[in-house]
Amino acid sequence: MEQVVRKLNWIYYGQMVIALIVLTAMYYAFSKGLYEPLDRMSRTGMALQYIIIIDALITIPLGLYLIKWLKPQTEKHYFKWASTRILLVSNSMPLGIFAYYAMGCYQSMLWVAAISAVAWYFTKPTLGKMEQEMKFGDKNEETY
Image (tube, rainbow, N blue to C red; front, top):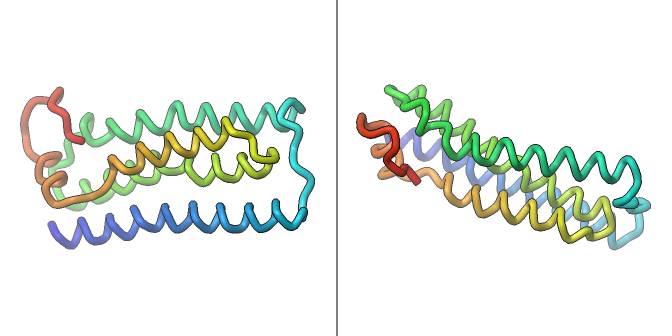
């Protein structure tokens, strides 16, 4: 079980590294004027906002409740679904950061990234969480 938690921690912190890389690259490009920021009221800007917001609205709740619905029986299945949960919940974080800078520091996209970061925190893999999520019991019991 400890091996599974270690592997999941690599994925967990890897998502943070990806978000930091996006943050650094976009901040550098924005501060150096390497691109023209999108107008948030343009068709492209609105489409980007809708895509990121809808992505967050779907993937964050789906990711947080995925294992609760599936109740994996083996460590292999737990690793598969827990890593999927981490990726689903945290994918809006780099997307929100990207959109924040792409639209010239548009505050709403930073909030989407922040909501994803808070949800990402609840996917932190621990041995106790793994044991609790793999045990048989009431499907309505909280696992986070």
